[in-house]
Image (cartoon, rainbow, N blue to C red; front, side, top):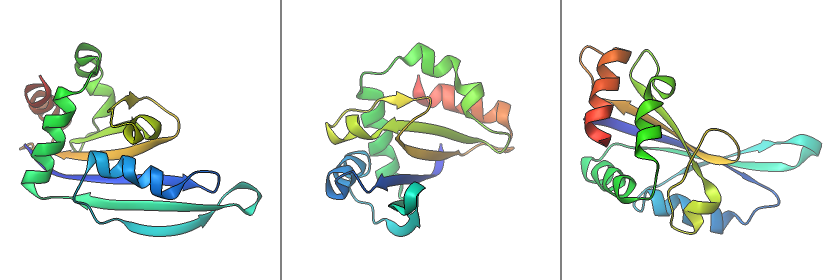
Length: 138
């Protein structure tokens, strides 16, 4: 149902990198991230962590934990058409702060862990991906 999950996370100079990575590890316990450094406003360093989850067991564990979490399922399902692109990618953001506290909270914007979930849809179209996502997350 899902081919892979790509993630991206920004850690700013005023944040505790190890604490933020604990939040990422709550979402994906067995990942190995790539770290890239960038420069932010006023030349402050920003660490960018990214990676890809493509092992079926890890994806299944993430989906199970997500479905067991306290989220507004109706709102989530009703907003799928806004969150899925024409290629069948589902874009989600999870609160970094809540992930540190082992909670999964979806955000629409702000400081978050960015996910790009490739829905296994054939043909790879938005309408097909929405139907599959509704079945998967319902």
